[in-house]
Image: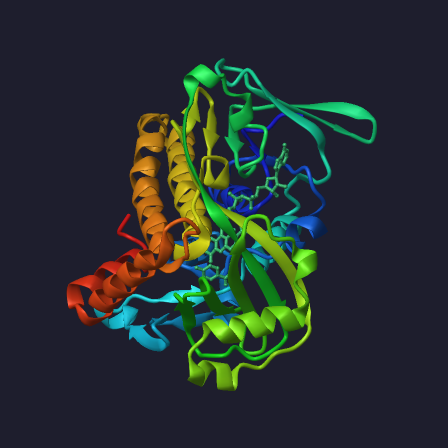
Amino acid sequence: MRTQVAIVGAGPSGLLLGQLLHKAGIDTVIVERQSGDYVLGRIRAGILEQVSIDLMDEAGVGARMHREGIVHGGIDLLFKGERHRIDIHALTGGKNVMVYGQTELTRDLMEARAAEGLPTVYEAANVQVHGFDTETPRVTYEKDGTTHTIDCDFIAGCDGFHGVCRASVPRTALHEYEKVYPFGWLGLLSDTPPVHDELIYANSSRGFALCSMRSHTRSRYYLQVPLTEKVENWSDDAFWDELRQRLDPAARQVLVTGASIEKSIAPLRSFVAEPMRFGRMFLAGDAAHIVPPTGAKGLNLAATDVKYLSGALIEHYAERSDSALDTYSDRCLRRVWKAERFSWWFTSLMHRFPDEGEIAQKLQEAELDYLVHSEAGSKTIAENYVGLPL
Ligand code: RFL
Ligand code: PHB
């Protein structure tokens, strides 16, 4: 099989890249290790920045997102038992974010790809990338007992943190920066109305909590838990009891509880691999970088990588110019590091760190008090939360 761009991974990065390239008349084949249902079953991001909304529109798949997505112009920060609204819309000159689940975005992209008849190989085993430092890169995979080869001009490594693309680069060609946090997030999804009409980020002496949503009838909640915690140890009742204790009295009173649809624990990590290009292979999204979810940046960073990569590949084919491909890595990393900084800072401000004692809580509360009462402080949060300019 031959294609112009072989894409490894059918998560949001790979699917969005495939759709944008297709719009520009560029052929792609996507190879994905899992089944389509498995990919859709992963409950992950919930918040889209304008850059992601615009890309969905550009890819021609924004209609349902505009119908069903919920626009938010603010977030609540809860500390010392009181909530304070950060008016993102006013502080950023009219910018907003949108609640639209990663599952829905992925479904829209998957369906559009299938409707166009574009090739996606699901359940591809033993995917390998070859010759990306030559003019003739290849991707191989096994399916139905046969080894298949895709000859291509470029490989897009959209295969997430545990993927094969970054892992195939010689160690000497790569610099990895990593911080693992001493806690995870226990997430619960339920068909209950959200406790509030915007998100609540809670700093409490019992640990961080987040009240998010997927729609007006579906809620997504998270609790900070020790890394050693097992999801089996958390009954739904135990989750709701603990969440209540981390909320303010007003929220506690209106919280509607119900059976969980999904419950899982995600570890928190900051990670960047530099550079993001190796000859004819380009990394995009979680394959190159991970942020802790506190700033809601992961999916949005992936979308920005895809914006830059699709633009650079289109320029290569349409204008025979490689200048945007040559600057791809530097342009992405500049934005990546700013989002890494914000996500690390917001995580550090909102969570309990096991070894830091009572003074850390007092210092966080003083910083939060400053931030919510200072226009400069609030603006810093708002402009990072909606996404810094491209
Ligand atoms: P994905 O989604 O991990 O997709 C990679 C795909 O590659 C496949 N794959 C392979 N395919 C072939 N061969 C191999 N060897 C392969 N190895 C892997 C995988 O099966 C998978 O289908 O990466 P992508 O596309 O770069 O997308 C990144 C986002 O998924 C991620 O950044 C976000 O989910 C992060 N994130 C959030 N981001 C936001 O912008 N806003 C949020 O509100 C937000 N909340 C979150 C989050 C992530 C979370 N978790 C669980 C990590 C909340 C949570 C709890
Ligand atoms: C989510 O709804 O899953 C979500 C929202 C905001 C975050 C992280 C996750 O910061």
